[in-house]
Image (cartoon, rainbow, N blue to C red; front, side):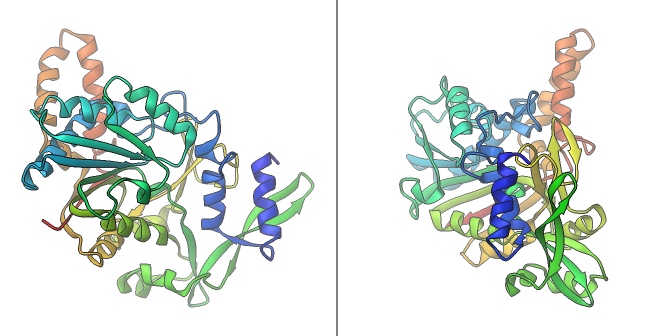
Length: 370
């Protein structure tokens, strides 16, 4: 048992012997000092456990910048414009986006770039990554509500692989009823280990996240994950804006497809040293844990706050509209005689091809007040 294992075990003992999986996931990922994202040795990328699209190639951030430039124009080219990035990882997206923004003829715009990041370790990485492009425009905040102008912002709230790392509840159909899987402790010869048990839903509203079509077709022992926190986060984003857009890039799909995938695959994914696993009770605090995003839920909760969906596409389709294929064509002409161009091309295609991130990652664009 490492130190975080002991912390979680103590929490279980003080909570009548069980906690929800969401509570477990929150502790192992976000404990202030021991959680996966807050460890001193937290790394992302080639030396870490996983990578994200902005780390693959700068074209991703360049395309996002072009999309945000289009948003700015749709809003009437306001002189003051704010981009809020939620969970900025290494800062690669911010760096590439701001670099491209400077090429788009927007020098007269008072652009403010706010990063919302709860991890002190990642904030330091982001500062280092963006120091050459910041120009004093980037500010860091621990919560969205701390961003200056919250509630009256004109701009864009952006996230890449934020929602898939939010804590989820694990549900199961058992004896004809939707119930919840809890985390408890069992003593073995090697020590105390975590295991799951079934009990009534910790909150009856968890079932409401599933649409009726999903609930009516669940079969005995079917398991799936729901994320009520995702609904709260999208509503907070909506509340932050007076006029603007929410741009979400993440793993997942619409309902019911996202839930049938969860039923078939087990739902939870774990990443350790670039290797995919499915046991969240191994390497406590030393591996990433994610679950696919229900984009239908984000759309419903956004609509409750006056946010309308204007586009939902795969990452491939998103990139196509923003100059990605022109860059591919350029590199293809060079790749026959330039190994560096061929290497760059292969990295770019990881973002686009179905067997890469092109199909698995989806892009949701929502609009408020325009």
